[in-house]
Length: 165
Image 1 (tube, helix red, strand yellow):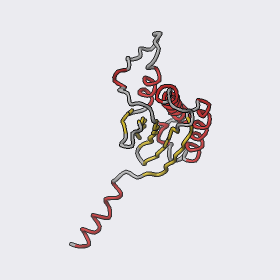
Image 2 (cartoon, helix red, strand yellow):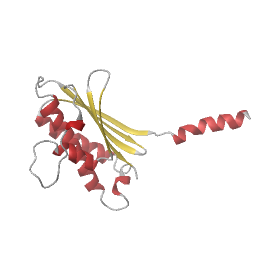
Image 3 (cartoon, one colour):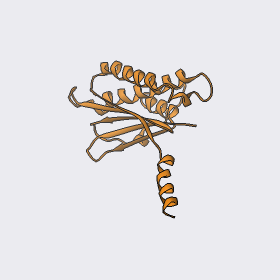
Image 4 (cartoon, helix red, strand yellow):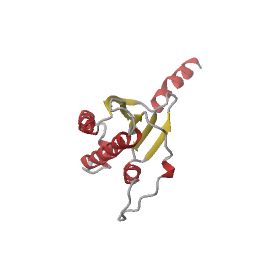
């Protein structure tokens, strides 16, 4: 019985999600930091290309899927700079984290601005001239899940999740 319990307990790790790779970047609230952010994302994707192959959905569209995620990262970062940090010093940091799990890729963007309720954004209707909300619309279309919350340390965290199908 002891052997069975030990074997059963030791196999639980196999079923729990595993982090394959995790990277962190801190930049200042400059829009020109976007180039650094996107190059960092490209390096992460290049280094983990085999582990990200599931994004291609069985086709050779991996690069397209990564470019779409890069667009979502671009939108999330520029929203943090333009909106959340609008009235903050340019030296205010923005933290970005890429977490590659065995079943998903997460992009996390932390800012130090005032919290906002994304549900108050007008729904963007493609083909219409509308100011605001387009970036949020794109992020929701690209990612499988978009979360926004306020952390205990007073920062806002935007989480973009792309799940393995």
